[in-house]
Amino acid sequence: MDYKRVQIILIITFSILNLYLLTVFLEKDDAFNFGDSSTTVNLEEGLRNDNIQSPELSRENEEIAVIKTDKNMFLRENASSLKNQTTRMDNNLLFSILSEPIELDFETKDLTLTNRLKPLQEFKDSGNVLEGAKYDFISYQELNQRIYYVQHSDDGVPIADGTATLVFHLNADNEVISYEQTYVGDSEAQGRLRTVISEQTAIESLYLNNQIPDDSTIRLLTLSYYQTLSLKDMNIYSPMWYVEIARENVGIQVKRVDALTGSIISAPVVQEDNADTMESESFSDQDDVVTDLQLSSEAEAGLSERKLISE
Picture (cartoon, rainbow, N blue to C red):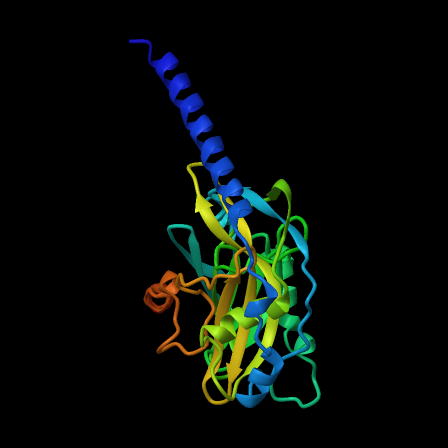
């Protein structure tokens, strides 16, 4: 049997299949109808009656492309190059325990959040995090003591579904002690630009589906991407609205709305503030892994100390 010929045939077959699936996926969006104005509710009045604080919502329908990223093993291949930290890979997720905590100033009054995070920003952008400069700040969630950064697509739109995220963990003294990281490579636009629903329509979708609790504040609303199709060699990302809803003494709840269809994305979210009720399944094992890394670091330190004593 000519195995080389069989290999070539299989490669060509899978390539054609990938192109077919991508074409079907892109054409699927064209069949969606947004509905007419008769379904519009008086959103402003409803939010006010439920004591929901909201920024001014745009009615503009932006245009944005679906994007493709190639699958890669970048984190796994380069994790060993990181210095002064203990790392571990879990599939495509990198966990790291820092040898020296990073002190952040959350005590001094009148400091902006940018100034408070400056030591972390410098750490991230100085080669201590793989491709750290490609991640930009998106959220600080005080109750669970986490600081979130995300990658952006080549056209500057954040990828906010957890597949391109950098999450720093703080201790009780507001010191950064560890982080976890996911990474995607360069992105490439696929096909024509697509019209997305407006900010107002996205919030209206959440409100009509009882996804915004009373006495809350919509503190962040940004157009972003989320992964909708995973093929053998590449991933496809579609536009979505990323929404953070804050409640006093409860924390931050993250909601996501498909920006092409207006449907609520019900898959487990990654960034949630209340660890007891909102934690993502994607990161559900992270505390166990961090604990393992801490024990490993402590064991190594103890071994070194015993060697010094014996000498």
